[in-house]
Amino acid sequence: MPWFRADLHLHSCLSPCGDLECSPSAIAATAKERGIALAALTDHNSALNCPAFAEACRRNRVAALFGMEVTSREEVHLLCLFETVAQALEMGQVLYAALANIPNRPETFGDQVYVDIDEVILGTVDKHLTAAVSYSADEINDLVLARGGLFIPAHIDRAVTSMQSQLGFLPEGNYHAVEVLRSPCSLDTGGYTQICDSDAHFLDDIASRWFEFEADVPDFSGLKEALARGAIRLSIDW
Ligand SMILES: [Zn+2]
Ligand SMILES: [Zn+2]
Image 1 (cartoon, helix red, strand yellow):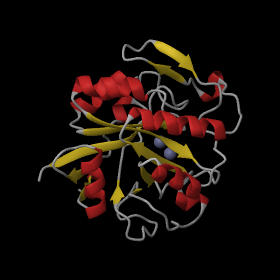
Image 2: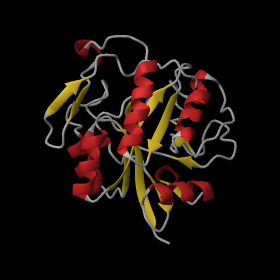
Image 3: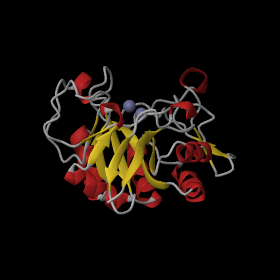
């Protein structure tokens, strides 16, 4: 079975901390250039750039997943990935309703724009997207599973906004994998499959970390099965 390279943690110009050059089109083109077969767009708490990302990935012949990096009530970052844009957008609506009502100040936090395939701005998001939602990590896990998505605690060994920094340990959950920054991970990963991603906020950083998975096809099902089997190789292990 072939191995495919994936980077499942990418921020666009919709994330206040994401570079404005990170349009969905530019992200898809850069991922293709760097040999990524499966890419996921994971802006903070929103999927509004996923429609353009889907089209851009189709044009660049990169397989795509759609989702977001949710900030839980405990300020833990969680990757939530879906097979379709519609699933991601619906989850995004649920999250936005539960997002703290802190207005975004572009001059302080950065812009939060969503765009079309040609980088035309379609709108801006009012609430500050890196704030926390009112759901716990556990509740977000349930929301994602109920929608058939993949749930992956993000950068669990990071010094901020991680399971390690916020909770001190990795609680048990229905995780499809955990994302690590280092291997071996400084946190007890409890036997969960590990992946690593770039968490790119700039085009240059795309695919600076990646993993490979073994599957017939580099799609949602192929990835899900590979994660369950542990058929994963990390760039940071080499
Ligand atoms: Zn994060
Ligand atoms: Zn991130």
